Image (cartoon, rainbow, N blue to C red; front, side):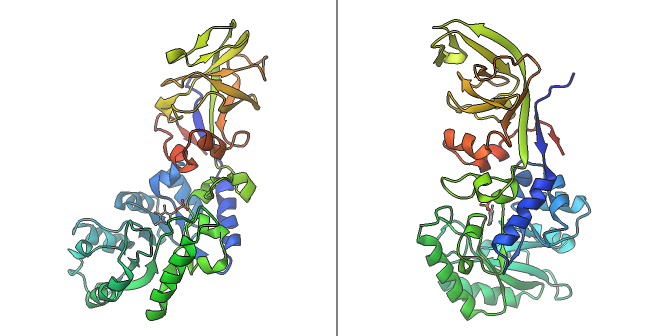
Length: 358
Ligand SMILES: *Cc1c(COP(=O)(O)O)cnc(C)c1O
């Protein structure tokens, strides 16, 4: 029998979350962000599902953009990190990929194309994130540079918020004001700033074209909140099965390092998933794992291929019992909080050994 550890992907939930993003920013348009293999959900399926709803798709790398084209999707694809090598330009021209320009060196190779079918490009403005982008004082020079290249057509200005996950952080308002100043000096361009988190902010932080990512997959973009509280549906259900049940007596410990010791006689279940599948090794004792729909605490250290749960809440579970690591019963955001990370890392971290089913 094939191993029953898998990630079940609910494409209807993915569509519903895109509609939720549209509802939160009704005055804007949105481009779905499908980078990192569709945040671990499978790029081809995610892009094919969202392309009819999202007129533009956004990815990080050229090779992700090529995978989208290989599915027969002809929507514009924005390369959020732009091109890196002179040869990347010809791929963009032939495939219609719209690169983001953020640095001088990216212009190498961009001068070999003619005005016929000029390629739309985006200019990334640094308004405070200080990762990629040109400073407000360099914007004019970059725009002139782009205008002198007959093969390129500047279509929009982009920025990225650093602290939008905190609704009370004033940084977002400051960044939005900086972007508005740049836009005022260069009217007529599409503006794009909002990541998922900014959809939950006031409309003045949205601009023309939002870029929802994690919210499409049901994860919270906001600190201290979980996706379901924000009207988002979980898209991935990471599931496995119990492969052994055993009773241990008080005082015995479980797993590598013996990091959990039974305070009383305990029935435990061994589940066929581990860090070799992308379940976080640093998940602490007590992390909920649903067995037959009942939340049971994780006990002991997560191994490569297995983990242990205390079956006290679900004592009749037998080998073969269904296990949900995250999904409807256990929010991926709850597991992420316990692991001191974010759902982005857990979802993109599910390894290729785990088949995705749709
Ligand atoms: C990844 C990314 C997004 C989406 O961010 P989320 O927080 O997942 O919504 C938007 N814009 C850029 C430039 C990105 O790199």
